[in-house]
Image (cartoon, rainbow, N blue to C red; front, side):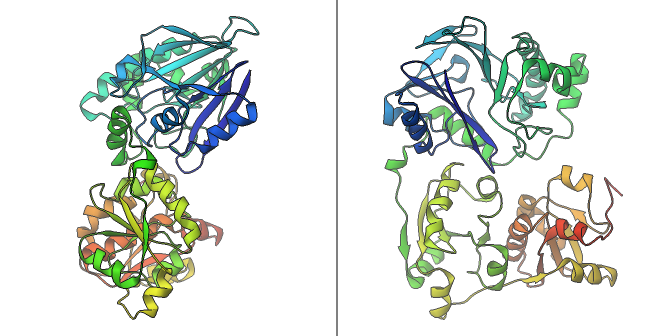
Length: 459
């Protein structure tokens, strides 16, 4: 049996290529499919099958893209009600693909259509060897059941029952999930990307919380914020995403053409790092640095109905920027600024800027009562440790919480390193009309490294 795990940072997404003697299968592919074609070529095996463990909420799957390129059959539970050409599986149904025997188990909970695929390598014998557990069983956790708010209690109860099925698969069975630490599909994911059923039965709290009511209460409390694009991506994956070859290809625009599009309603996404953005950017631009969790936060805050324009540090960043946007269903990218901000500045067009300060200056100005500090990290991060004077507002929430700071002292934004605070500061700058908006470079990491005081929870 051939096997390869593919990990995508940022989205913390795990996908897989598994091969028998004559053909191979791709499990939960990303939209950028070249990596799977390359792996299959290294195995010297054709891709004949694609398995989807569920309708993914946090990214656009590559199932349609890969099927179009290879002619592979897509397998997914009938509970997904997929609207594209596929082989729908019943609960407990077994399929044999080459030398691999695969049993699909419906495991609703994270979503109504989650499933686990248990694989036996028939060259070794019929005993299950590994399981692709999707977002049902994660390493150290289980998939959050609150993505459908009107069904969250029902789904949490379903998840409890589904985990009872999974824990009986066999202690020797290797576990391969769809996500690792950093994903917002759970709250306590391990940085490990594989395990065994036996290990998870011993140490995974999701399998240890009983009775059912206690489990439900635990899994509906303290979940991380759910990004806006989760419901959108799930539906796109159910219908079947557009093929990348069918999408409009972005073109370069000179500064004056670019300005005309901005004035016509196009939205500017500036992918540069925090220092060049704060020095000079196009008025109204969103600060979404490629150095941060670009894909997730783009999907979270960018309106899906508006055409996008990109500002890049270098044109070599274009493919990476496009890949990130398309991975979360933002396909309407009209173009980019030719020559970047240097060409814009050389044209004499208006720019905007914001102040940047170090943590040393932040400490001095907090002590003198000169400013308000907003911590833009997730609540779990804030609760674990934060600067004493900081108030909490996750970066995407500035889209509506900016009203809380329309007047008064200058407002400074901080995260762990500066990317999320840059996004929050750009939102504040654009929406409030205030000019005294500040981004703290180095973030809480620099604050802690400097030995400055922090507190926990609501202190």
